[in-house]
Image 1 (tube, rainbow, N blue to C red):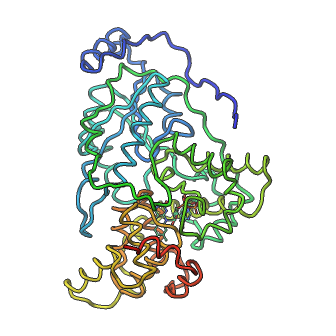
Image 2 (cartoon, rainbow, N blue to C red):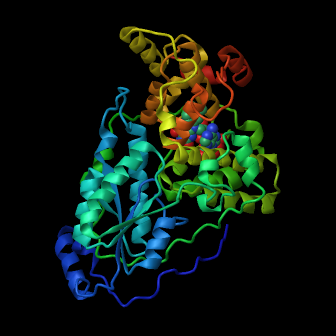
Image 3 (spheres, protein in one colour):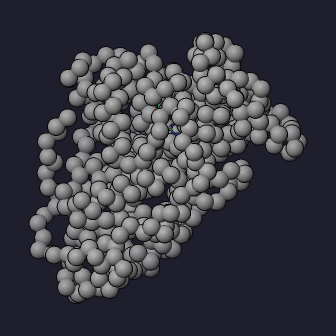
Length: 474
Ligand code: FAD
């Protein structure tokens, strides 16, 4: 699809950069650059750091867009947070091998995309509050541009960063990069967000405009950038992953792969035109869009997908399927906004049903059976094995295994959510904890006890047991 060239949003500048061979001498090249451009002597020269986290793209990135508009020099960076490698209170790793591999691929692509416009990605690892402080000092940055966070842990990290910056005269601004709708455009304040999804959807869908996709900068003025830090990047490698040929899709991170997937789903296969009928499927690459992993790291934005759907509607005709993909993106927004207004609610144990008291040994045995797909319930086990071996599970599968953990095993739902956090290649804090809380009766759902009858579900959604045979055969 030819969208036409976006306008060059960078004013022309006379700064010339040193040769990119400076990789090993980053520090001295930076000093030379600052001297040559008189940066320290010219306080009017504005230097900004742009934080990349779950907005790993150049297009439709409000952070980057605003930073490039408002500053003379922009330094894009990603801080690989040490916490990602830790084990949580729920016994699982924060990020498992599938997530880390996808992140690695996405960062490599982001660096390539940035280099194509004259910049590059600074990759650091450690505690964000310490690493970002070092970057501010190193580059003499006066301002940091970052994504708006919604969830408690992420907010705490951001607060630690902003506290450290107080002493440095460096400001910290956040921008919305996740949702279809901009919070500023909602017809109500976030505190008045409807408690029920349908009320939320009805209040926005025909009344509020979705902002157009922001163009990507055609040029970014940065100091000489060393090659992507491979030592840090290689921390994301894992020997634990063996590509399973049964996987619904072989995910690969990055903006290019996201666009290829969109092209495949919309234009090569027209699968979008039948999405509403197929979306509850469980086998193969066409039953649903599989956009979730790229959305989770921001390799594609919800607005980019929305615009592509509207273009598809014009070219091939709108129908209830093309509408339904937008409908699902409304759900994504809803969980995003819910998290913003009440972050702690989505991590509380108290729910309606997980009340059966089990001792620790019993608890661990039951949880392990669930995790490893050895509960003896074929529909549950097949889904859990798929998740373990591929990092992905269909939406239908997720609902069933979550209900099973909450309602049949009567275990604390947060262990299920924490395992998903480790394992899901598309882990998104708002979607994951929001959906789990919703099913556990802790979220906004007015109905208590969302029980899925597993036998019935299996009979409806896997009537010939194609899915179960795929994952349970020896
Ligand atoms: P499609 O059916 O093609 O939908 C398109 C997009 O709409 C998805 O990529 C997603 O961004 C959004 N979407 C669809 N369903 C939902 C939903 N129920 N809630 C919010 N957004 C939705 N989704 C994640 O992206 N990350 C998670 O960590 C996550 N954890 C979940 C945990 C549980 C217990 C449940 C029940 C659902 C979870 N989901 C999560 C939502 C949903 O299952 C996945 O988004 C979907 O299966 C991903 O496949 P897809 O991209 O092919 O979806």
